[in-house]
Image (tube, rainbow, N blue to C red):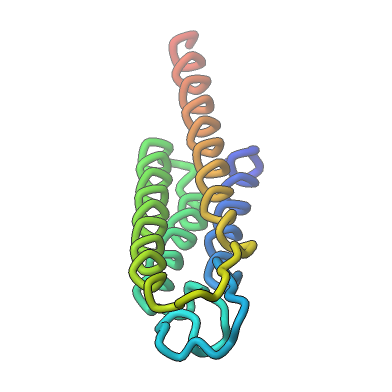
Length: 148
């Protein structure tokens, strides 16, 4: 059912994934770091700096939003939620790899965390809550079927 709480969780998870594309993961103090691939343009590391990272976050958000409309097939809805989680973890790992690889190029400039670093973790929380809600609904439907 679309009006269930897991729909709200999935919408919030999708918003977190799409928000992670635009929100900066890290900011650098000096803008004259020309050797860094991630910080050279705007002194901020966002998912938009790397096409693969942007695509993975988009896939995670699209899977979370698409999962809302699979309410008639709850097992598939759970699998889609897990696929969104896997895509989010892949984006986290790849983003961490890119950041770690680029940290040697920034020199002595100080790097601070941005708001975007929290959004993948918000996605994880909301997606897990949605999966728990979907499983709870499935258990309720199965118990009602036993009573008939």
